[in-house]
Structure formats: structure tokens, C-alpha cells
Image 1 (cartoon, rainbow, N blue to C red):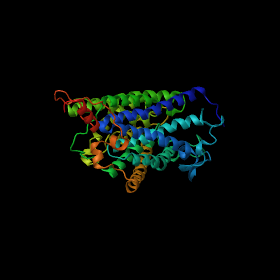
Image 2: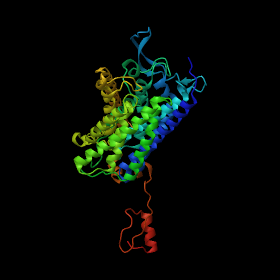
Image 3: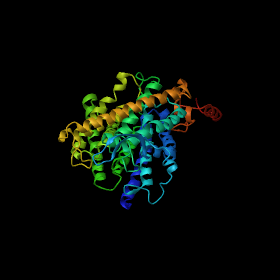
Image 4: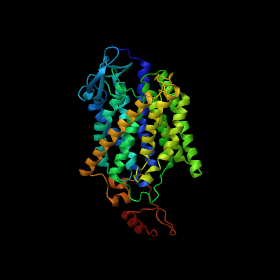
Length: 461
């Protein structure tokens, strides 16, 4: 049965897709401000190149691998005489090149299928970009670009199908987590945040720490960029979560409110931890708390009440605030705390559904605190740990492959002098040299041409 296309739903989903796409430049600013000045352009480029590689792959076969008819096996019968199917991977040829999806009869729910394609493309892009924060300052741009391609094909596309592809939505058989397991993930706590967060850990382990990690300060160089990026992420995240209702309806409204309040609670919780632990709240803590709350409410946005969302956000804010310090104790160099925020926040939000799921929410499921027992909690745990194990193992193998072939690390000399110049022949801040007067240094770096010109004009050295 073909449903009639809703102009309102279509307009909302296309708007939400644009909001989600904006999140990747927002992430670029967020990450770019957190690194040292000599790495800002490379960090931003790592997000932008993901828009290129994943965007093209999604149209060629990525969408089909995620939302085509799943290849898998039957595992039993349903009560209505149907078949229970364990879907593992969408057919990569079914919608290759998005063939057949431009027809007016091609719909996903009440929207054109291509509107759904656009929305999910932006999810795939930012998922890959998130991983980059763990390997800032030291990964070759070629190695990272190749990683986005291999990771998209071998990790993200299959996992997205497991979590987001529901039977009968875009294909007859969808993914096993969404359908056979019945774990709830409204907008990507498992498919995006656990997936990207644990993959980031795999890369950090393979690449090793930055020179001076743990002994030299590596502070964010531009907190203004960090706060701007956090603001853009929060803004775009309303499309991320509310858009995942795939309609302009009550579920979208519930997700919007839950996204707002959980994020607010997480920011407050993170700042409170900083105040009690360190004696002062910081702007970096506020920005990090915002992202932690957004991550945690992503899977739970359609299954908890607004009060439950406050608890989800607050718990995630505290958990992530402490988790980001684990890298110093355990010795892995997760440069921008992708593991501590996205993996831990994604795990927290996914598992807390099993406790706080509200029976009157759009999901209609009761968690432990609302009389549902442990039924939903074990489903959430199985889904979360399955994605964690799969993503870590495959990402680790991809990282090793790149290390043994084209290589990952830039040279120590390039790392010390700055990856921007080494990889891109550009500087993030091209401050015009001001010649020295009265023996006061006005600039930190002068090229040979600058010095020759200074000699010609008689400027003081």
C-alpha cells in the first residue's frame, strides 16, 4: 500500500536534513577550536573531507547497504503468521546510484524516499567526522581520507542498517537490532555515537599518543570557536533528533523538548562537577556538557518523558565529565575526548532507556522504573555491546591496514612544527608580519623573504 505524501512531513524532514548537514561544519569549528593553533585547519578539513567521501559513497551504494532489503536468515515465525528475519546487510545493488527512487511512487512512510535518503546521508557524514577528534595533530590527511571510505563501507553502512532499517519502511526486511532484537534507538545512540566513539578508541590505540602527551599542556587554542561549534551542534541537533520522527508530529515534538531539556541538564551537571572537583566552571566544560547531553538523549528522545530526559542528561553530564580523564590513567591519547563524550554518552543514553522508558511516550515502552522490568534493559544492552564489539574490531583492523600500507602518522618534525603546514601548506591564522621596532618582537614567525625585505628597508632586527 502506497501512502499519500504529506507536504508538511516532507518539508520538515528536508529542513531537518539541512540542520543535520550544518552539524558537520559545526563539529569542525568545535574540534578546530579545541586543538592547538598549528592544527586548526587540518582538524576542520578532517570533517569537511568526510562530507565529500561519505556523501558520494552514500549515493553510489551506501544507502542501499543500509536500507536495501537485508541479506540475512529466518529465525522463526511471528504470531500473525509472518517470518522473523535476522537482517545483517542491505542489498548494495538494490538502490545503487539511487536507481528507482526518483519515482513519485517511491515513498518512505509519508515522505518521498529521496527525502529520507537526504536525511540519512547527513547522519552518515557526521558519524565519520566524529571519529577524527581522537587522532588530532598526528594523522596524515591521506590516511584519514582512506579511513572514512573503508569505515563507511565496512562499519557505518552495515550498523546503520541494523539500527535504523525497519521492516516494510524502505525494504521488506530491515536490520536485526531494529526488528528482531527490538532495542530502541530513536536517532543514533548506537549507530552513531557508540559506533564512532569506540572506533575512535581503536584509532587512538593504533596511532599512539601525540608527542608530549601527558607531559606538555595541549590546551584549546580558541574557545570562541569551540563555543560557536557547540552552539551550531545544539541548533542542528534538533533536526537530528526531532527529524528522526520522519514526520511533523507528536513524536517530533516530544523529541524536540527532550533534546532541549536533557542538554540543559547535562551542561549544568558537567559545570557542577567542575566546580566541586576543580573549584571553577569552565567554558570548555559548558560546551562539553552540551555535547554530552545531546549524545545521551539521542537514542532516548522518543522513549522518555521530559522529566526522564532531565535525568538522562544529568547522569550523562556527570559520567562524561569524569570519563574524559580516563585517558590519562589508562594511557590512550584520545585528543578531543571522543571516547569520553560520545562513547560513554552514547552508552549511558542507550542503557538508561531500559530504566526511564515511559509507557506514554511515542515509543510506548515501559522501562524498569515504570513497571517494565528488565525486558527492555537487556535488549538495550545487547544492542549497545554488539555495536561496540563489531565497530571496535573492524575499526582496529582498518587502522592496522592503513598503518601497514600508506601509513598513518606524520613525521615527528611535522608534528612538532604543525600539521597544517605539513599536510595542507596553509596556516589557520595568516597574521601579516609586523617588523621589529625598538627591539620589541611583533611577530613570532618571519620567513626568509620577510627578513630579506626587512634588511632592504633598514628595519631593526
